[in-house]
Length: 130
Image (cartoon, rainbow, N blue to C red; front, side, top):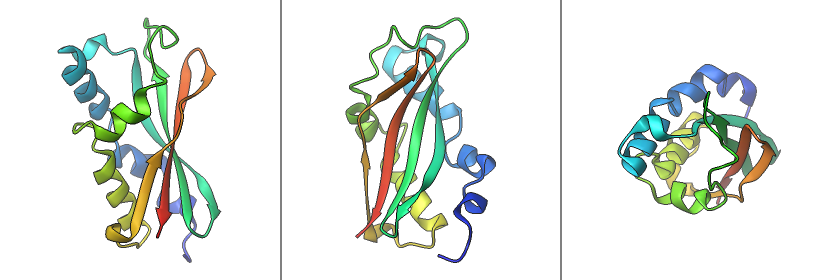
């Protein structure tokens, strides 16, 4: 890949690929009310540790007046991977296209939730070229 990945995956591009509205859609489906959600989900680019893997993260950022630490976030990778509103499979395909890759030739996975602080939890999101 000749382009600098940081130039491809700018904060603006990542926000377009995974808009804040997806957090609201997730909580609307989960609780019937988006305002019940304790966090916003944001997509971040981490890097390209090897030629086959692209590392992203889903950041769960505490909403004002809510308690992220009080919410169960450790089972979320499994929930996120299947939730139609979040559409992680479709997101992986969009990211692959931005990389100039055929979405049919990649696989993706969500790692275990990491608690960075009481206001931030992170779920690793890996895209691997097969």
